[in-house]
Image 1 (cartoon, rainbow, N blue to C red):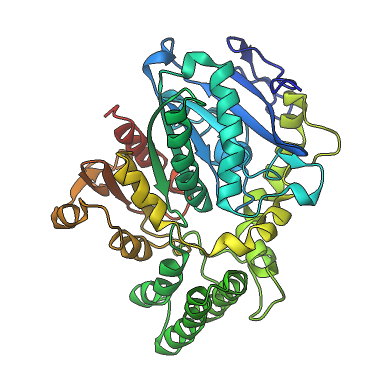
Image 2: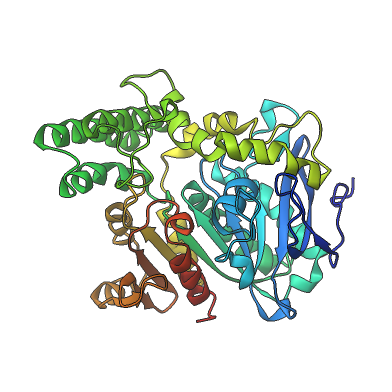
Length: 440
């Protein structure tokens, strides 16, 4: 079966999108989309926006990977963060498509518009995720050969960063073997689940330092986190995932429902409230998967966007398999991939870490802890460097971020942003992307 079997637009088609709740909205963009059958019974959806520039060949290609696992890049990343249109289908001034071609992929299979014919085809770990992505990228660069020489970057968010690291490692091998032809230029890991335990163990201290926990609460949170640590150290990863969810419930009860995605906001929705000891992964699914498929976004994706795309099977509901995706990855969820980041650095891959100051689920303290565990030979020199301030593009004379770069490793501390940096600090995120892709 041809991989391009479901694509409804050619490479160079210029069209006008007019789905603004029935009100025509002219947005010129060069787009294409389709499915790749990555395995028998496993169908992955992708959506490409070619850069809004007459000479896209001079701009990078970025693949965006969402978190979860089970969060939709083609939905959330596209319409909530960096795509050319927002959820009201109005032009986004800070769209990354202004400075790059952007490839959204609903990954792993079962996420967003991607689907499997049976639950058995869902992925179990990042190795399986990476193998599937190699099939998609092989076909993508083969069919769209005009992108083979363009610098290709993988940008990610949350669990998407863990997948991005594993995908990058496999991509290097594929390029060396000649099975994929592309100009891989680097990977950027945003608020990424690289070392889950380092995140969990720093929740307490971070919240305490920001006056969101008292001494009693700190003790309770740390006790729960230590249980997660013990399970991880014993290799009981699925139980560790359950206790990770339980620890989040302890945090919620001691902070009066802090928002794990931005500590300065509070979500009083019933979807994110849970009780300690709630069965299985229900509490974590409420907090981290369902908000990525909020009702308004689901209406958009299962309504006008589905109609526009014209290729989504009738049996597939956008996000319908998301919770199953998370549950199937539960045994892999708490495993670290610091060693993979080390492999990338040793191979000379450009690796960027960027993190939001107000993020809790992947707090910056935890990110800094695992970075210090790297065996990379440039780590000592990197640690001795002084960071550089960046002015906030949205507020003159205000600091918007700090960064450090040494050889092929970079770290960006993004201020006034939570877990979804492009949503919270859109202009700063765009500037950071341009710096990473050597446009600024």
